[in-house]
Amino acid sequence: MTPQLLELVNQINALGNDWHGAGSVNRQVLLAIARHCSAMGELRHTAETGAGRSTLLFSHLSRDHVVFAVDARGSLAKPRESPLLKPGRVTFIEGPTQKTLPAYPFDRAFQAVLIDGPHAYPFPDIEYFHFYPHLDPGGLLILDDTQIPTIGRMFEILKADAMYELIEVVHTTAFLRRTGAPTHNPYGDEWHRQGYNRPYYESLRADGSPIESRFGPLLRRLSGAVPPAFKERVPEFVKRKLWRRM
Ligand SMILES: C[S@@+](CC[C@H](N)C(=O)[O-])C[C@H]1O[C@@H](n2cnc3c(N)ncnc32)[C@H](O)[C@@H]1O
Image (tube, rainbow, N blue to C red; front, side, top):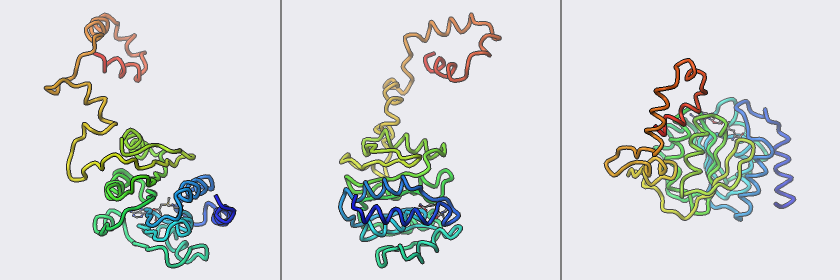
């Protein structure tokens, strides 16, 4: 990373984590965005959902950065007016992404996309749906707030997908790189081809019924012999593991 870029990250960080009241990515994440993006040269097209300190940084990393956000707690107004925003490089699409993304005419491939807008299920998943067909091979998908269980689940799904390789997790922000694997058809199905689903699919017989574990009959017999009072003391996760084999 160049000294100028490091200085910019420090200036953005000096604005403070509470620069706007909607919650911001921290210095380590800003540094990781700067490091991964600058390693790809100047980016042609990038996008993010949500706005704030990350917007300032992207305006220096990308010639054309699109921001999809509502102005919760000044998170859109502040970067718009900040002297740290590189002028002429950012387009703000104001409004809930639930409405703006389906209406947006996606006509370019992105080299980096940050998903950090609304966090409730299923909104980040919906945002992902609109972006993933337009992510360049080699491009970065950055998923913030993976500590939120529904976003963590989305991260697990993407991590297992042939379309991505995991580069790094910084704090609770995941950095995935789009591989050259074919794009999953956004208007098709083929759930069984997805890495996250494959172990389940491969555990099914051709007629769709589950393949019985060779321990199934023994476990069922033992289960019948165990007193209920003892069963109650078995931890839930152990029970779940055993049920799967029965
Ligand atoms: C966690 S903040 C983003 C922080 C930003 N990445 C930063 O580094 O400062 C979440 C952002 O999502 C925006 N947001 C919340 N709900 C939204 C929605 N339904 N559609 C679009 N943006 C939304 C908020 O206004 C805020 O800009």
